[in-house]
Image (tube, rainbow, N blue to C red):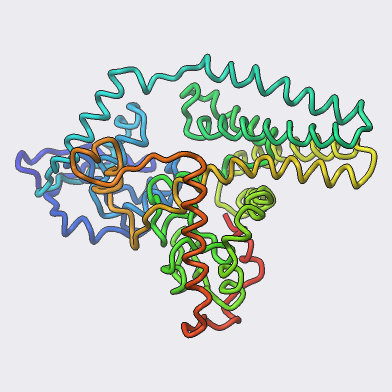
Length: 419
């Protein structure tokens, strides 16, 4: 019981019942870290979010990865102010040994200062500027495909479509974070992005949110789990278990072969990476647990994309033009795929669950606390990634370290196409 013996009305899944707040230690909190028994702490208050797990907008993995911990700073970073009103119904206790470290206090002050400076305000006019660039690119692409027979024009149209997809991807990122209008309008804009790009926002939410709260964790971050194509650290040679994909990332003989030459294949894979995104999109759309209407809207948006995209391809004069058009479009979006990995492939990685008290430390506070913080050019970032891939590739060639049996590998998983 809390010192004041406070009662709290709790309503979970429509049930109304009285609960007395418990006194909970951090040690006790850590025991409740499973899907059927999931507690978290925010600003010294303990919440049982077991019943909220399946309804969490950020996906189940977000709560499971930080379960049994104080998640105050993650909550502050990822949630709007309106989310606070949902918390009281889940509170079951208070954390007896809750403390705020100096770096946590400084981080929260920084967050407050940024909000007061207006940096969290949404500049809607910027999206209008994006649209003013994107619409002409798309229109020119379509007109060039329909009205020209020139091979070079069609190559240019493929590049225009790739540039259009890049901009749509950046807008989709903000919409996926509900950061454009911060209202229900974003829900329909997500469907529009899916209809324009063929990349489902349900897959994006599932994958990208996991990346944010587990950045560069070899066991939890899907954005660095690319076995058998890439291994950015020898840690992956141990056939680690992916808590996101819920399978073992087998470093078997085929993986060893592919990783051994990854510094040569990197840009080729990035140029064709969109194919994998299409596959993951449909796997999530068909297999991920979601309500009927969400699945129907998602598949409907994807259906719209494939209708207009295939119609556009059919307008090209022959298969030679079609293949060249698609390759140009995909390779152009490969620039964006490279951009996505530059910040992570050459950065340090860590083992185990994300730790809520350290995930934010590589921010501008680094100088004060003497933590590494680097900013490099595009060229230098690419060179660092290639050096990282080459170092792991050369170590993978060491045949004195046996790989797991081939039978543990699944061909379907070779493309990492699982959502």
